[in-house]
Image (cartoon, rainbow, N blue to C red; front, side):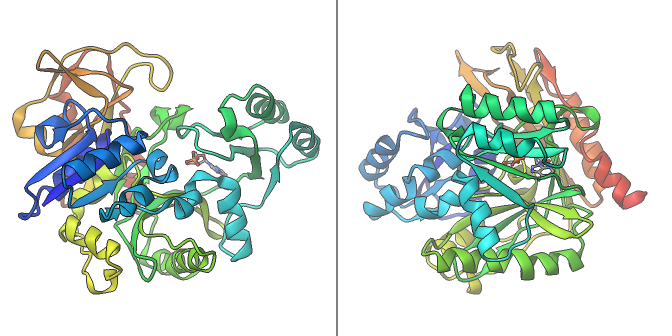
Length: 422
Ligand code: AMP
Ligand code: GLY
């Protein structure tokens, strides 16, 4: 079987490594992939947003199955375009990917179907938003409607910050058209949990839970990033809470999308907050999380491609999705300065015995040498029987991987260990 995976990050590397385990897979093409993915797949320099280019490549190369991993091509209709040419895909169609593509859509969906989330107001002009903020409870949360590279959420601790955020998004167009509409919502508190779930629109099978560490600096300080590290499972996510989420959030979301005529097939990401009033949805993503995937997929014991095909064929209820009883920790090694500006182009050395669980993100081959080319450079994962061993194992690997200007958080997993061990 010839497989295409669209995307170029650590998440795509983790997906590719897992798909490779299926003996029927003969070749994997990564579009565009990166310098590290090149070890596991054939990288073809077609941008993940170049839908016409992706479809042309898949048709010409007689691709048997395509996995569309990032949000942009999903929201742009990459799956619709591939399916139109008869290529089976993993990932939602555009009319379902809107669950991530528009926060206004997802908030209205949750309100309509009574799915627990923060209370909110929608604004399509700065004047009304600014007037509303004069009396709104503080802190408050301001979200650009559309995709904004994970940067469209501002937690405003003061009224001045809130007013400034609205002006930046709506008047200065900091996130372009993504900020034409905004959501202003209630500030929630409690531990955060990421749950990725396979769904074929008929049933939903959650994967092992995980915990992201979104801020750039130790102690959850600094700017919001795409994620600086993850652990799985998330100790706050007990069996009891999982059951509650299944009943009040996961199943109702799948049913709501069906009722709206927007059946979601693929991986639906539930960003949850376990508030004193129960679990609530912070965000939906229409795809695997990054770097959640780098701890979740290594724990998957079932064959990933088989599960993905069951999603495509609407036979997920008959397909086992089994996770091992182990723990995983992924530490992101980034370029110092991320998520703002940073130097790149430094050679990376990874001992070959560590490569199997090192997922390459921002790195490119320069004259055959793997060099840094992005903010998040590597995801270094360790798997172990206990969370303590997984965390220690990931950091031990990190110490043996080198590149110029490397930066990483030192406390990935600390909160999870405190929750577990006290
Ligand atoms: P997002 O970009 O949607 O993943 O949001 C980034 C982060 O902002 C989340 O991981 C939360 O930590 C935080 N956040 C988003 N919405 C809320 C909210 N309503 N209350 C408190 N924190 C929030
Ligand atoms: N790690 C968060 C995300 O993938 O959006």
